[in-house]
Amino acid sequence: MGTAKALLDWGGRPLLQHQIDTLIAAGCDPVIVVLGHQADAIRSRVACGAPCRMVVNHRYAEGRASSVRVGAAILPEGRDAIVTANVDGPCSVRTVRRLVEEMARGRASITVPRYDEKNGHPVAFAGRLLPELQQVDEVGQGLKAVRARHRQTTRFVETNDPLVGLDLDSPSEYHQALSLLEIQQ
Image 1 (tube, rainbow, N blue to C red):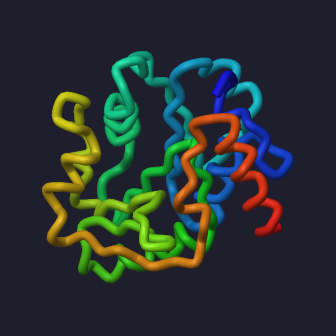
Image 2 (cartoon, rainbow, N blue to C red):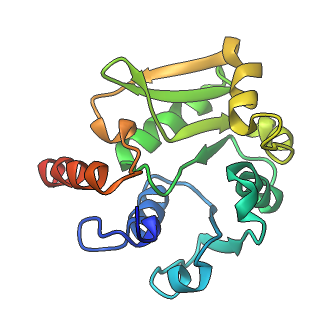
């Protein structure tokens, strides 16, 4: 991307701030933000008050699974749902709420949003899967392995939210995504 994705402008605020605000507005409590590369620069530009907590993954270079483990390690037990969101996949309040509502019904181990016949994000895991999230590793395929183990009890939630398919990995993808943001505002 050429710059920290967390600090990309998203509707007049850093993308990470959007994610934090969205998760809090959707009722996620606590919101655990795992920082890695450029943690100090990002922390200085993003507000994270209660119920948000920032932690640094000093081993971020090992891959995403190391960040999942860091966040899962400090997450209190007893959650109905654990929503995992990447900074480069902006989400909406209505989609996060819908995923959490599906988890509260207790029929699924994992809920995945779908848009235009494609799986998206964020993904919600049943709280009972916390021990598995605390043990993910890159060698074992990380969250993909958890999802594969619970394929039979995964619920796919159809949505009309095009944000669920975004993955901002290049400047062109970011600029295309900005047009979706303008449509939604």
